[in-house]
Length: 200
Image 1 (tube, rainbow, N blue to C red):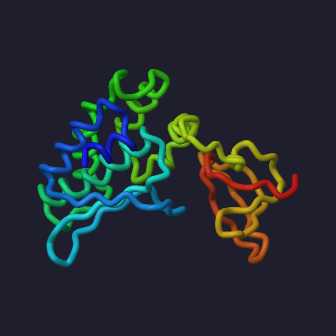
Image 2: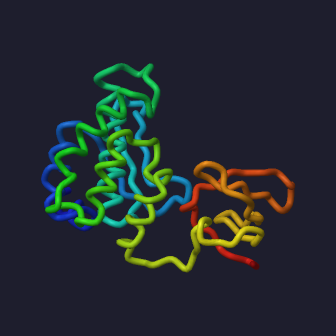
């Protein structure tokens, strides 16, 4: 297991993550990429715990996703199954588990202030923290030919992963109003959503 983890995690995170997995009695599955999520946690019918994490994540995002999912398991075990999946109990657990990893021996220096800010109040998805998501993206092995919504000019048309077309509108407080071409319905997009520019 440690040899497998070494392929996906920063070197100094391998041992502590292995201990966490072992102590939590969790089965870790590393899976092919799913567009809609980086990882998930579920309690199987036999009572055992399973975490899946996308193999395509860079090592820093993989580490955060793994700890995010282990935090679900530990929070449910400690506080009971009736807590909100990303409520206060999960946030406290996630903060506590991530703290030993937020140091320069594990994360690059430019990520540390963004991580410190993010973990003051961690969100259900690190993808909703646009600044952190963009900073993490530069460590992806395969650089995408996609564009971020915030980079597109207003009024241009773009395609998302499922083929649907949208026209970019104005920015609300944090997200962009975009009209779906086929239905005329308005959707809100995170600034760091990756899309394919069709025409400007």
